[in-house]
Image 1 (tube, rainbow, N blue to C red):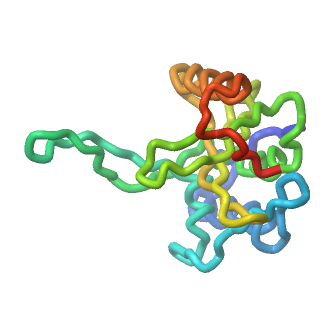
Image 2 (image 1 turned 60 degrees about the vertical axis):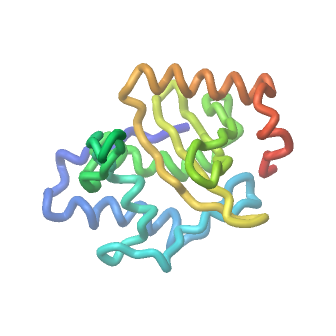
Amino acid sequence: MLSEPLQLGKVDATQLIDFLYGFFHRDFVANKTYLNQSIYIDPRSNRLDEGKELDFWHLTSRENKRQVREGNRWVWKSEGRFPDFARSERIEWVKQILENHDHASIKLFYHQESNSKRDIRLYLWAYQHDFVVILQKLGRSSSFLVTSFYLDDGGKRKDYERRFCRYKNKENRELEGCEWF
């Protein structure tokens, strides 16, 4: 179901971003992509950074954060986004996972975030390949890509397995009726 990861070591470093953007542009800008043939994946082309959709950067880079003390409490501060080669070499997987969301190798679950809005997001986890795609609903029939990434932390894998089981076992009442399709 999933293609081989891209071999980024063979790409000239000065051309890497444009090379990766070519896949994003093909899959989400030049061609419309739908989840379950009904939920449009909006690339939000009105939100650009360096001439490329912000969503693209979330599929190819990782935010580095560090904890700093502010007064009597600790807060996380961003140090910026930096290239993430494990994400980048799997950029083609995002559309492949969306188009095959009902495949046995994809664990689909909804999760209520701890952010200020307490958003409910859709997770598509290609668990045998340790790769996750996260979507946020925009309206009745559209959504956007929050991020995608390669799970490189065993603790995160256990956390996602727990989230998946809690969703499947209907343990979170706040998720009742949240399904998009």
